[in-house]
Image (cartoon, rainbow, N blue to C red):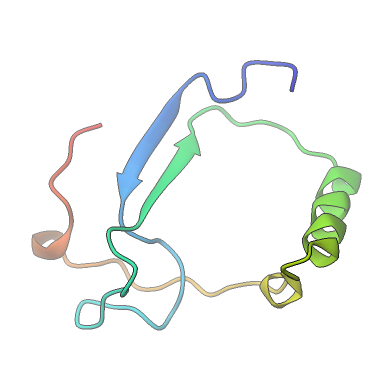
Length: 85
């Protein structure tokens, strides 16, 4: 991949999406971690379409992940990880 992709990454503990987890119900797959490229990168619509097509074509079909997912309410500060990035 050309460009400076992945040159400035933020790392976080905890999941950010899904409405089935909250301050009382945590994920059984913890600890969940995720990474974000701090720089904004443009993506073409055709590239996004190809990503969706690739997800559906995998042996482990990801068709069920192609819908808009909800976002949960933020976790209380006292329950959030105390990490400095």
